[in-house]
Length: 135
Image 1: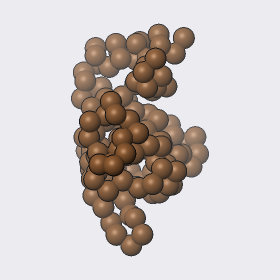
Image 2: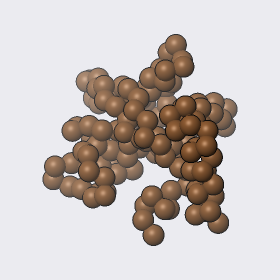
Image 3: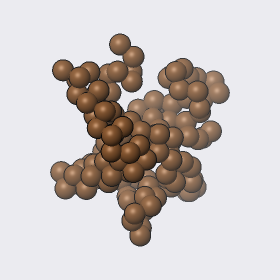
């Protein structure tokens, strides 16, 4: 079973601006895709696996970026491809929520983004497929 088949949450190809800090340097990169559980940040300068950090996602329907904690789950660099099926360089991020309220707010935003990006019909099919694979 591939990693995509093992995912708990369906992913959509949504590009959002993401800002984060590494040591004393601020970076601005873009997500390649997103789900309720995580995202892929396209970058030539990934953080180390296991690094927890605060980042801000620019979500079009919000006046201010959504601040969220994440943990680097895997990286693809020029030297190491932990996920060879992912062609771009970057890092896979697992979202870390402070509480259930933050999780609920963010998951609702992601659902809305996916519906807007994919359309209601495709989004529902994606959810159905994810449920079938989870059973």
